Amino acid sequence: MIIAALLRGAEFFLRRLLHRILSPEVVVGREALSIAGASLRGINHMCSEIASRGMLSRGLEMQAQKGSILVGDRSFIGPWTTIAAKSGVSIGRDCLIAERVTIRDQDHAIAEVRPGVALADAGYVTAPVRIGDGAWIAAGAVVLKGVSIGKGAVVAANAVVVADVGDHEIVGGIPAKCIGMRKLTDG
View 1: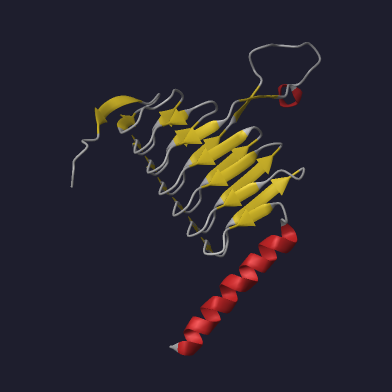
View 2: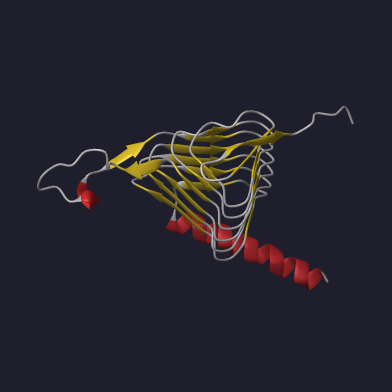
């Protein structure tokens, strides 16, 4: 039992060291738990920060390119989730982000057609994404640029969020619309 605990501790230490060597711009909190297979990358010296006691699952892909990704204390990010930032993605404390969620703060600039410029070369339109404390983003949901999701809000499975979600609001559908409110209780 003691040997198993020592091996787990050594594994977490080595994983944190590997992150520090391969991606020095990614800051992982002292007590954050990163499962093998999570990919955390900062590109162009932009910063990602995962606070203490966060949980990052296998298959997670986080990429900060000309932007930052901040994950608050005790937040969980499920397997096979993608978070991409060219502007900024901020995830509050105590958030639950289920598997296969996509969070992106950018779109390709498709609104204008420019002769001689391929769509892939047209650039990006960016706007920061903010997810409030205690929010839950269910499996397969997509959160797009410029969206703020309020404190304690719930995004249903496979919803596509293109507009702001209020505190304690429950949204679902494509595009996501309000389908209910969470009840606030004293106890």
